[in-house]
Length: 314
Image 1 (tube, helix red, strand yellow):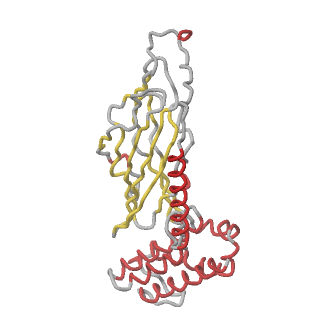
Image 2: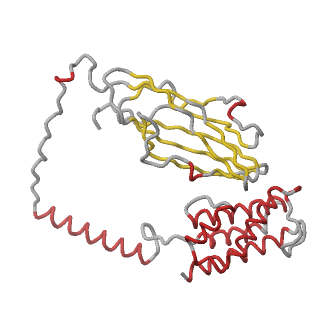
Image 3: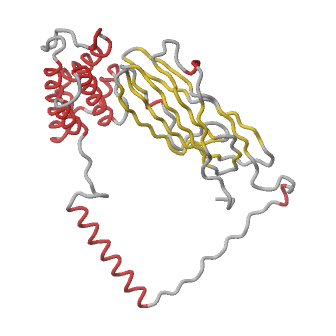
């Protein structure tokens, strides 16, 4: 950008976190945070941060509360990118969150910036817990020599684009390359290959994954993984994390699922009962015996099949 030595990435330092970075109940805890180590940045520099959080079973990261790319984080930093992944453990879920910040403010003399810790919100049914990542700081340095007076600062004149001459041989080469590109794109479209790959439907993927669960894992692990797979399918279909209290908004925005409202509400009720009842088992009342993990898997697979058929027919 404005400086040939512009800092694009800074080395990250692991931070051992004290118990204060967990909520009072200990159900959600930040176990690792990596922030720029002694950074000295200039305008345009990109800074990276990694956060790992462990949440007990039932608690899910409210991804809608994460900052959006392109938004200002404070007076100096802008969010460039936010990504997150989740991995299941027997006792809960581990979330790995990655953020990229860019310094967008120029200074005429070095300034110290204190960056507030990122708040993270977790939800389990009606219960909401929040933790905050550690705060950190950077020193922002000027691109222009601080000894240079403001009136002496001027932008360099734009250089004209160099004139280019194309010969007949170049024109033929370009024509052949364009033809090859067109043939390649047509072949990719016919073969359903990138960039034309058609996205598989979320409930179809969930149904396929549920079938595989029958051949592996213990009963408790099967049920826990099955519920998470269907939750993820709902989140992917909506484009955000769907909670039980938001089903009216979800179905209002997607009326094609309306005929299956009763079964969708039953799924969220079963999920809540599974994660919060003793011994991670469903109670009677939904046509499935207590501890009947095979019946639960079959019911969830049927639900995903019906939701997928509804989506495919739309």
